[in-house]
Image (tube, rainbow, N blue to C red; front, side, top):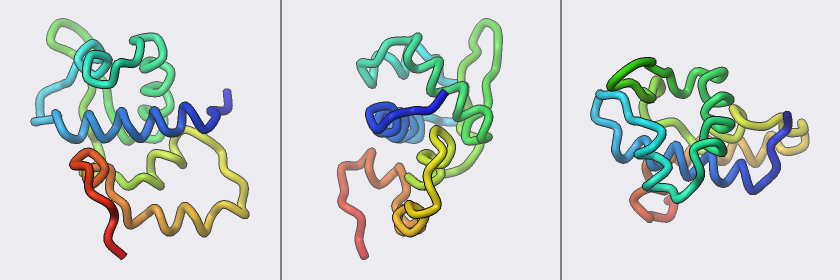
Length: 112
């Protein structure tokens, strides 16, 4: 399944939220849903891709949820995780390597 631009943007938003609220304990998908105002089923699709790319790991059971496995991932990390981009898009992704999702969560513009 290929993700469109809407899901790519949602994926970056969700990882930014997870990065902001993650404190070492698993974060439930319900908490992320509440913060992002996105449905649980939509988030499950996103997190499936993020798990495959090892940006997050999951913990099952009571008190389970998602762990951020990569400290402060870049926007490029997330985009690469959730979609297959054409080679011609690689210069854009290289530029986005320098934009951490944490910076977006704080509402700050990237500095050159």
